[in-house]
Every structure is written in structure tokens, then in C-alpha cells.
Image (tube, rainbow, N blue to C red):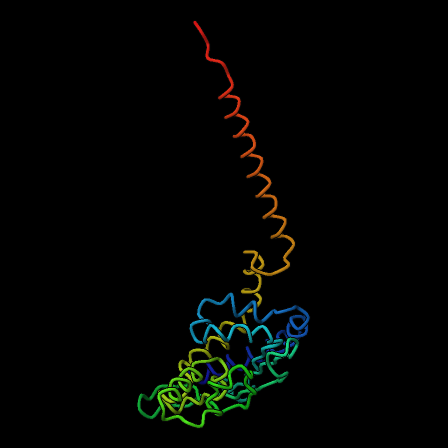
Length: 234
């Protein structure tokens, strides 16, 4: 049964590869596409720090590439631009594979650290730049840094409690939900008017305001007419 499942996964990976490559060319042309997708996802924000969001606006591409020979091995590539000088322009690829946990005998994800240049604003909490990890302040900054999205790139799945929290959960969310269904989340943002500059949502808002103003004017006229109307004498 396991062999059949792997063959199905390999077949799916081969069939969808061209589709995702074509989609990639299109989404690269949409401003802040991936930031909007990530913001729309209910669980993504639980895995990162609130301060990370302003840097995620610089993500220009997210792509998951499956190993066609070993369908459970894959890589995630994330590209950043430096349009506002908040972060260095860079393309980072992180590789993952599945292995059996010796303690639980269950399959788990493991990875190798990927090199990424952190935002300069994070220098004080960047674990690689903290020289004093024994002082109270050093420990505090180190722990804070290990909770950011950028610490995920160094996650291995082999150091429980000593690296980025929820590394496997975030990875699976990206691979199994966010990447394959990104257009769904982007469309949801369009429909709810959360995309800046969305003309259709702006027109809808203006229309609603006009209706409200009209109703208020009619109510005021009726009240004024009622106040000035002389009482009827029988």
C-alpha cells in the first residue's frame, strides 16, 4: 500500500509541475501576491512574530519543488526583493526530506540549515550575532530571534527545544496548503476587499455610503416636517 501511495504522489508531482511553473510566471507579475496570500492564511501568523509581517511584503516568489524520484523529498525556494531597503534581495532554497523517528517510529520532516541574510533591524535578536547568550538580556534576545520567520531557515528538526518552534508545522502548511492553494487565498482577499487599490471594493464602499447618506437626509426631512406640522383641531 505504501508503494502505491508513493507512486500516486510521484504521478501528481509530475502532472502538476508544469501547472505550477506557469502559475509562477503569472504571480510574479502581481504586486505583493505572496504577502497577501500569507496574510489571508489563518494559521500562518501563529508560526511567526508580528514584526515579521513588514518584511514579508518583500517576498516576490514562493515555490515548492518535489523530487520526482523520491516524492517525499522537496525544496522550498523563497525570493525577496530590496525595493524598500528593509531586507537584502536574495533567493533562498531550503531542502527537506522524510525519515523515520527512532523514538516514535513515525515519519517526520528534517532539513538542512539554509543561509539567509536577516534584516538589519533584527541584528539585536539575530542568534548568529548574539555573542553573549548567558546574560538575561542575551537569552531574551536569543529566544525572541528563534521565534521569527527567519529562524525557520535554520530549522533542522533534529534539535527539539533549541531551534525555531513549529518548524515542521510551518513547513507542512507551506507545502500542503499555502503553495498549492495560493490562488484560493488571493481570491478570498479580493472578494473581501482586503487588497489595497482594489477598485471594485472601493466602488462598493462608496455606493454603500451614498445609500446611507440618502437615508439619513430623508429621515431628517421627515423629522423636520413632523416638527413644523401644526396639530389638527377638531
